Length: 359
Ligand code: ADP
Ligand code: MG
Image (cartoon, rainbow, N blue to C red):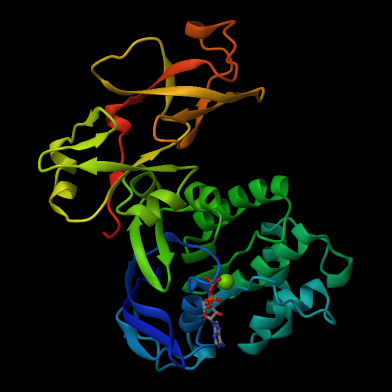
């Protein structure tokens, strides 16, 4: 039942503009994969090619071994939630949700049964007769999900399903969509430009940049081991600091940024090397120790945020980094940071991320 999706060398051009450039990606049975990338990177286009509303210029997509691209959209057995939901405003909630069943010739009584069951799942029991216009954003979002899942498709496509919701509702719907996924086990391809959402929801993330895949991996892999500058910059609040290189090492000022064997491969590449500094990996430390790299810095600003304290600090080369620290760490209880303070920043060596321009 659970479909696998095998995307091979899919390209799409509009005139001379390549929107998808030789994309290959395998999605496992029952997997929840997120396409994450900036606006205009080609995410929607890839979903539209999968759904059959856009024709690929070249390539192949197989679903459980069968070529999809030659099939008309209605035979593809794919449920989709569009970015703006694309609900039918003149129909009731129940008519919207029942629409895919009607298309598939399911008779009225069975249709009603399945629509009711589905409305129950998305916590809209009793809303069947409502008009779409009388629903909140979150409720519309649930109707769209119900309509995409009611015919138990082999594949579910979600195009920025949460982008129209406010932050609180978005957080809750992330969990709800995950629960729906666990319940139905539908192979799901989700699209977002929000990295937090991708990290929270996905089994794996494919990072899209200019119509190509910059990296594919688990949330932890793409966050902790970005393959190139684009991914490191895109995931998290990252300050990219260029390093100076010689034949054996990379340097930040006078600090030798030693390379562990696993990362030494990057040294072989020509071109520049960057160190990715993230707020949660940096600490303000009293003294240097062997397990951390240590940099001199000057405090620029300090903010208390309740659950954390934030220090903005300037490095010797002029870069400004953000340091996220526990609200009152025992070590610095009572300590206030003021602009102009000279401090030492520690970066545990295990959190060191070095990247080049290309993968
Ligand atoms: P995303 O969903 O990642 O924001 P899209 O897939 O919607 O990106 O668009 C990728 C690129 O393709 C954009 O530069 C967009 O302008 C272009 N594009 C999308 N659809 C068309 C079209 N029908 N004709 C011409 N260009 C298009
Ligand atoms: Mg889009």
